Amino acid sequence: MQLIPLSLFLLFLEFVLPASLKSAVVLPGDEFHPGWKKSDRLITFTRADLYNYIDGGAELFLEFGFEKLYIQRYRSGENELSLEIYEMESPEAALGVYLAKCGQETPVEGLAARNSGEESQFTILRERYFIHINNFEGQKGLLPVMVALARAALQSLPPDRPITLLDHLPRENLIKNSERLIRGPYALQPIFTFGEGDILLLEGKVFGVVGNYRDEKGNITTRIIIPYPDETRARAALHHLQQNFDPYHKILETGPSGFVFIDYQQKFGQVTLKSSILDIRINLANRPSAF
Image 1 (cartoon, rainbow, N blue to C red):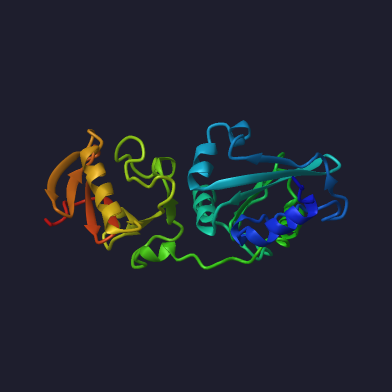
Image 2: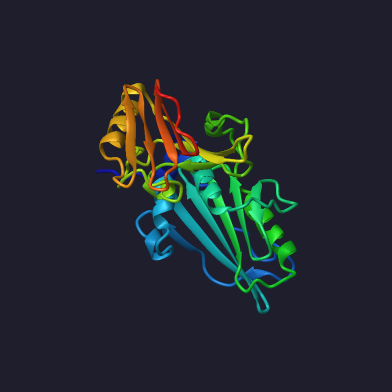
């Protein structure tokens, strides 16, 4: 049997692999900023071994669609920075991680990408890449160096693509920076406990959007909107949620398209199915109207 030369095989892969599977990561080299050089070898992690690097937090990345992590450290004298580039399967997956990790978004000037940061760390979003820059010792005065490192890392990455997921959230009364994405139980956990496991049947494939709203009386409620691929999937999720609802909550009323409940804090909630979209409202001060 005649073997195909490696060079031809690699060329073949270049043509047949979709763009979404080709890595665009090129790590900055020495002197990205005067006096700064790599202080260690490049370290990478895949889905199979991410747990070896992130102890207790890998589940969130894997749930959203993690593919590969690149880690490079840089040093100048006693100062050290680390650059972590998380390659996700899609821009939506990267956005989900970014929103979960950025906290109260405080953009740093001088970066041509969505970001949030301070002198100790940056979080950056670009296309399907989530970037984290860490100033280990919190040394003041390293902000310009961190910006230079971020700029160098962004140079090889593709431009952002439009993400329409958050368009499902109504804009009226939406609290700024409250938006989140979910794709399974780990992202859902800090928002609300509906039941055990993948209670909304997202299966690490379906994205849901989350936002907090403030009404005219100052009450804050949360809305979770999940656009399933079709009505069959959405109805199956509604049925599964209702049948496996957390016993600490109480279902007050049911209908063919949803149910009303009261949670353990005596706040009301409502689950409504509209075609292929599951619309969930929680932390309601008053009981919602009947179906």
